[in-house]
Amino acid sequence: MRTRWSLFAIAAILFAGSFADAMQTQAPRPSNPNGWILPPDADKEKNPFAGDAKAVESGKVLFNKKCERCHGPGGKGDGPDADPDHMQDMDLTNPRRAARNPDGTVFYKVWNGRKSPKMPALKDELTRDQVWQIVAYAQTLRAGSQ
Image (tube, rainbow, N blue to C red; front, side):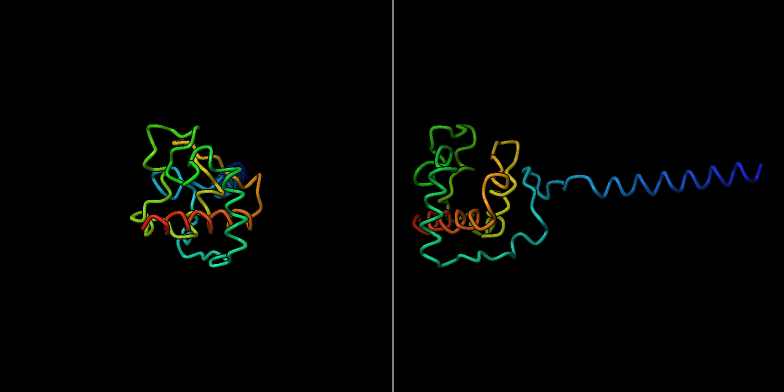
């Protein structure tokens, strides 16, 4: 009888351990109620291309290819595929949003995207450096509107 209880206890411990391990390996959860998946220190990450004119120019080319259809040519959220219900959120030129969207935060928003309102993730299409270049360009749109 003791052997049966010992085996039951061991099986329960193994089950609990594998369940806990499975919970830790699930996809990261959004760190923000708006559906963005951001690491806790995203706002502290600095753009390695900040102030690099060549990177900004490369970012502009990439922005035109990947982002302009929704964000519009000037980043005001007025592209042909823009969501009319979320145009204010899609406006990259709003300087008041700068504190909430430093470079690292913008990087992970572009990198990971979100489901609603829809923002496609670019991590499967572009390199990290290319996304940082888009961030460098996007930040110039904000700076130009101040």
